[in-house]
Image (cartoon, rainbow, N blue to C red; front, side, top):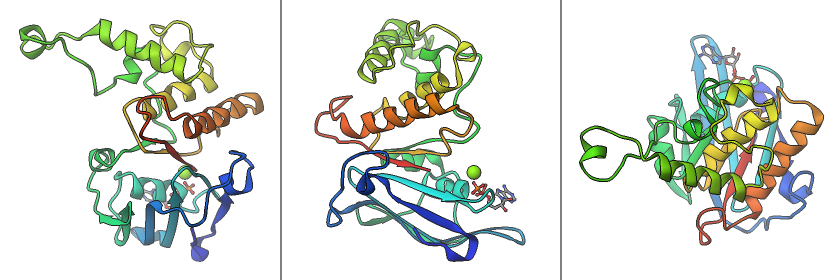
Length: 241
Ligand SMILES: Nc1ncnc2c1ncn2[C@@H]1O[C@H](COP(=O)(O)OP(=O)(O)O)[C@@H](O)[C@H]1O
Ligand SMILES: [Mg+2]
């Protein structure tokens, strides 16, 4: 990524340097996600003055910049939460236009936003399925919209176990009773549980202590490395901002 005009600097391809991932990514492997020359202005404020981003298969990419440098704006542009004034976004080399986050989700991009990661009053399983609830088959689901709680519970348990989030024992626990790191783990689990290919996290450790930050970073590595979380043929990729 380059954006000299507003001080967003690449932290480096962390997977290549081994700082987070401990694994290198071939520089010849194709880009799964690219942003080119993205411009976003809010009135007189230029948040992004021609930002680039390149994410390769199997890579964990970190981006750093001062407060106000444009990190969240870039994330929102590649996750469909804002429409840039100009610039291009490519998935697997093909140009795409996102008008909303659902468009990006259709391409397997899931985002954990900075401040909206989880709904505190809801349980872990309710958070996992927020806006994606499963209904019972047949007339009860179709007409009465009755939730298939048994299926949702077993899916949630399976995902939590696969992710190794062993401290979260009770999936019916309200998220507000969890620690910051555990809440972030629920947000990450939600982002990857439904077959995403690219997970984007906006400052996932900003509110966490050293130990909890380490746990979240370990979780991100696990997602990248564990191809069996949902679909063995679909490796996962993470952009960590
Ligand atoms: N919705 C908005 N309306 C007006 N200005 C905004 C808005 N969102 C971000 N900005 C401005 O754009 C710049 C980049 O912000 P942001 O992308 O949030 O940076 P970062 O995430 O790096 O802190 C800042 O100057 C910020 O004040
Ligand atoms: Mg931000």
